[in-house]
Length: 98
Image (cartoon, rainbow, N blue to C red; front, side):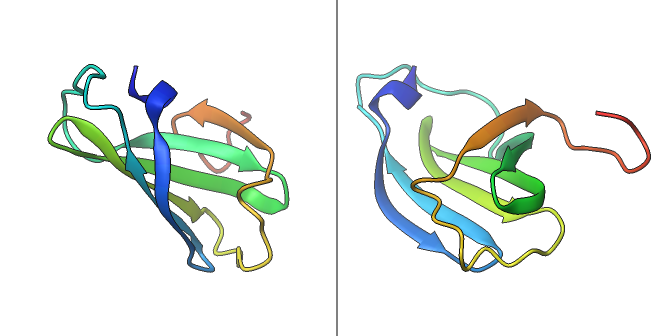
């Protein structure tokens, strides 16, 4: 599993979310499928209405993780390194209970 060996090599809080470039162990199993991998949302403490996440794959390796505010909330004041996350599959749909 690549996540066990993933290291962040660059991180930027864009004010609307973040970009995080990743480096994984070349011996880790290859990821197959389309890039980006998405349809994941999560609750991030301090970000109303949560965030969406996309994982970009390059040559079968996790290369970049993008997080974005689902409601246009500014993330300028969020310390993502210390934030508390809860991930869910799929995106929330207005008018439907989670």
